[in-house]
Every structure is written in C-alpha cells, then in structure tokens.
Length: 348
Image (tube, rainbow, N blue to C red; front, side):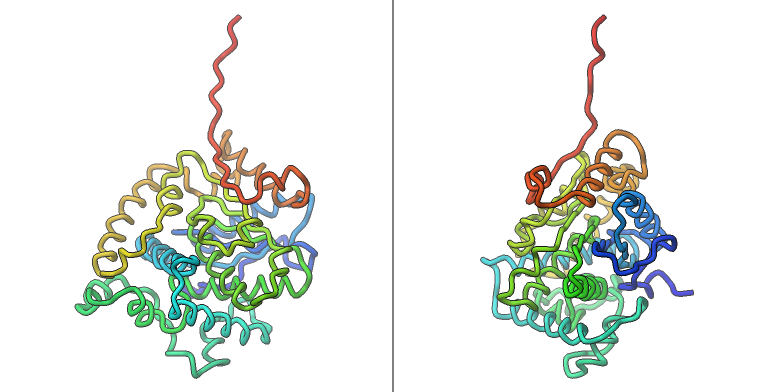
C-alpha cells in the first residue's frame, strides 16, 4: 500500500462514480493537511452535490507532509504566483514558466496512468531538463543548511525544485495535464479547489496560458470554484478571473490571511522567511485546530448548520447551472462571503 506522500499527484476516484467520459469534468484539488482518505470523503460529497447532473469526478491528490510543510509549500507557491503578475514579471520567471509549458507539451503526448509519478515521466521524456528525482520538502534539512540564509528566492527555487514548479509540483503538473485533456476532449471543465489547492490550480492555469499562447479560447469552457480561498484574483490569468467564483466563510481567518499575502520581497532572506513561515504555521494550525471555519467539510456541507449548508448549495448551483445564465453571470469574478444570519424573534 502506498504511503500518503507516495500518492502525491495521483488521481483519486470515488468508487461508486468512476469516470466514463461525460461531457462535464470535475477536477478536485485538496488543501493543506488533507490525506487521500479526506479527499475521498470530499469527492463523495461532490458526487452527491452533482447527482442530478452527473460529472466525471476526479481528484488530483495534493499529499500532506504535515501542516508546517504544507504551509511552507503554500507560501512558496504564492511567491511563484506573485512573479506572474504583469508588473512583477522578469525574464527569469518567464523562462521558468516556458519550461513548465514545455514539460506539459511533452506530457500531453502520453496517456498517463492514474498513479504515475509525473516528475519521473518528465525526466523520462525530457532528460536534458531534469535534475534527478525531486525530494520531499525537508524542513529539517533547510534549517541546517548554513548557506540557505544567503539565498534569494530564485536560488532557493532552483536548488530545491530544479526546473519544476515551486511548492507542489506533482499535483500542479498533473492538474495542468488533466485540464488539457479535458479541453482537447471538448468537455466543460470545472476545477474545484480548497485552500492550497487553489494555489496549485492558479499555477496550473498560468502554465496552460503559456502552453496555449495566443489561443485564448481554451478558457471558455473552464470554470474555477475555490472555497477557503488562498489566492487573489490578481494571482490568476485575467481570462480565468472571469471564469472564477471564490467562496469564503466570514470567520475563515486562514483564508483571509493567505489570500492577502502579496509582499514577496520578504524572500530576500529565505532563512528568515522560513522561520517566519514556521512560526505562522503554528499560529494557523492553532486556528484550524480550534476553529472549523477553514475546513473543506464546512464548505462542502458535511458539517451541517446554516453556513455549511449555504456553501454547499452555492457550490451545487455553480456546478449544475449554466454559466451563461444571468444568475451565475452575476456571481462570476466574485469572492462570495458566507455567514450565519442572525434573526431576532418576532414580537408577539
């Protein structure tokens, strides 16, 4: 049986709803501290939400190596996304993005198995660009390396990630590959992501935009639904922003904190940022351990109660509705805040 970390980037199916080539494809990416078993629970909830309008429901597994490692991965992904903002682009960041698109082009010629290690596939197809198997992010190693404190973000990225996307490269490349397959098949592709999964999806969208170049119509059949958001609309390619709805609970402090991270100059000293990330991770872990407002179970209606049910009904509407209808048109390119409604009792 594979360990949790060995399942990174693998596909997950709900057993009672295997893909059969439907016209609608739902690709789900899980968030921080979420095991494959937890993602399977979330996929089951999504299957039931779409039972009247069946989808091919596929999970892209973002494995967890513990909360602190997941938070650091998220911050690294946010740092990479910031470099894709128009005002922040550099020749170096664009060269890395082009290399990711080249990887996707090589992968697009393959029919990958559900449990393929996508980085090994890239090495096999493009050995000249690979630098050995990517190790798991080792926090202890980074604490001990004396030269890490002298690295800028680009050097850190190159040393620990080689040519691959920063943060969570396996689910990022697998998601880009599965979206590309769906687009080529003519499917309506719904990317549904929670927390860190939204960072992974945003990077995958930038890879796809680079891959397609001037052909912008690829976005027309993409719908992006993010709950417990960890990104801003500025993190997305502009065309995708118009195809996106974010859902956030009023008291989801983790989403509020991460979605607003934008000052990436803090990467000038990566060791200092590592310490800050770990300190912040403990604070955020405390929030999650004492507060369920960031949990996928709340957003998917598993918890029950008014906010949970409202979020689930909104996700159901977005999945089952026509995105050209006025109601959903009005919701697109929006962050929707949900909360419990307090109603005073009527006086007799």
